[in-house]
Image (cartoon, rainbow, N blue to C red; front, top):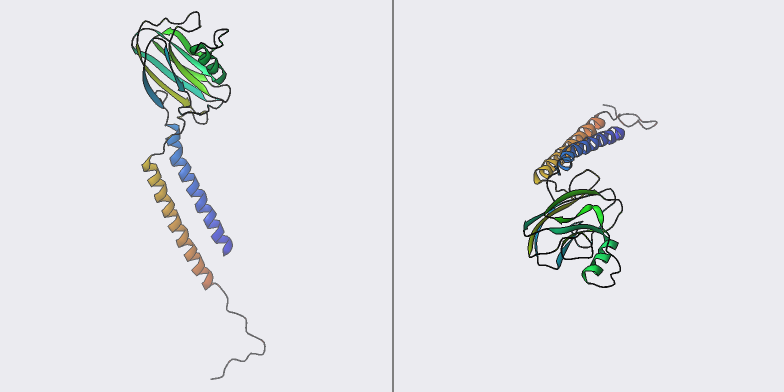
Length: 223
């Protein structure tokens, strides 16, 4: 009897797990359609200014190896700017360049995510190492020989995402309330089914229990 109850519980738990997986997987698979971005920013820069964005989307965050940094930068008002994708060491060199301190040579940058003298630039970069990455919008006359020369204020739109390699979607996709409600309903139904099955099996087991053996030298009462 106990074995049957345990088998029933395991079967119900297995079915419940399959249902949850089947319901949640489409949400994760469809969370990223290749066109949306996690972060959408606007900035206005005067000549000699720059703006840096943490590519992970939050201060102090890390981008993992195998992830993709996807970005789109558009100048809405003004002339050409420079766009750089920098790792942590490159960003420190860039800050020295921006502050005119200890600049012995031009800073380096990740070419796949950088473009100078541009008003519109989009890219997807495959991250090769864990670490911090920065998207820099530059309206300066920096140490690069081919950088854009600032002519006035610029208004720039910056959109970017840190795409998790695990499923090709957004960094942390949200599960909709409808999915949570469906899963909770299924869970409650399965719990009720398990309880009913256990009660039925328990009653059947009690009916099949043989009467206790008669004690030795026992004589039933005579009428």
